[in-house]
Image (cartoon, rainbow, N blue to C red):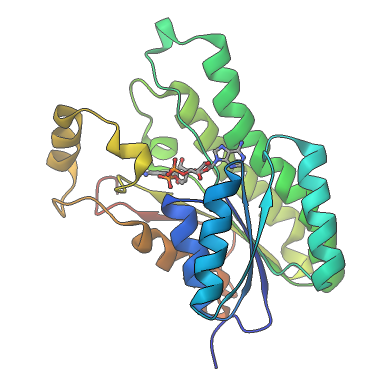
Length: 247
Ligand SMILES: NC(=O)c1ccc[n+]([C@@H]2O[C@H](COP(=O)([O-])OP(=O)(O)OC[C@H]3O[C@@H](n4cnc5c(N)ncnc54)[C@H](O)[C@@H]3O)[C@@H](O)[C@H]2O)c1
């Protein structure tokens, strides 16, 4: 029996990178996966490819920062499936720059997607999970949210925010059978990190004890664990997937 047979999992930012890997992983474990992203074409391609592999997936275009759009997705999913077991808040962006030069719009954009988006989806699913007395929420944070990162004050603050949000919500809903955790990836090879200059990548490698970058599937494995029954008594925690970069 596959681990998530009969479960319904929402994964945001699922059209590529870490979110896509998480969605494929959960679908392979039998979950009906609800893919959410702003990029509809890519999202539909991922959904088709999951279906071709025998999995269950549906694509919903929405901006996670748009509370009304998020509410519409969650209402539709609850109506179709009658349940929402898992929420993985993965959608995220960067707008890097030293604080002294950081534009207000870059601050706002990152907080809006990374932090408010996580709030919007968590709020939208929580009543359904409370009614079911069951739920698993995982926020994708970042090593930057734990140790800070020069040039990423906005991003690091947003990621520290999703950790504190997870812990606060964990305290609110633990008694309802719902766990809320965070996964903090280090340097993972995706489109987000591809764009970094070679000297920056080299500097990262130097501070990673395992001397290699992580892969999206490394993050997906940690998420799978936190969503599974094996993690039934784990809540309010941060699991780092960073090759030892921060410990
Ligand atoms: N790659 C890394 O090294 C790394 C490290 C730590 C944390 N993370 C986090 O992991 C998550 C995934 O990152 P990734 O590396 O796969 O990046 P990515 O840029 O490849 O993927 C991010 C996805 O989020 C989607 N997205 C962006 N804004 C959105 C919005 N407003 N609404 C809905 N979807 C939106 C994008 O379209 C994209 O599909 C992010 O939260 C990121 O901050 C990544």
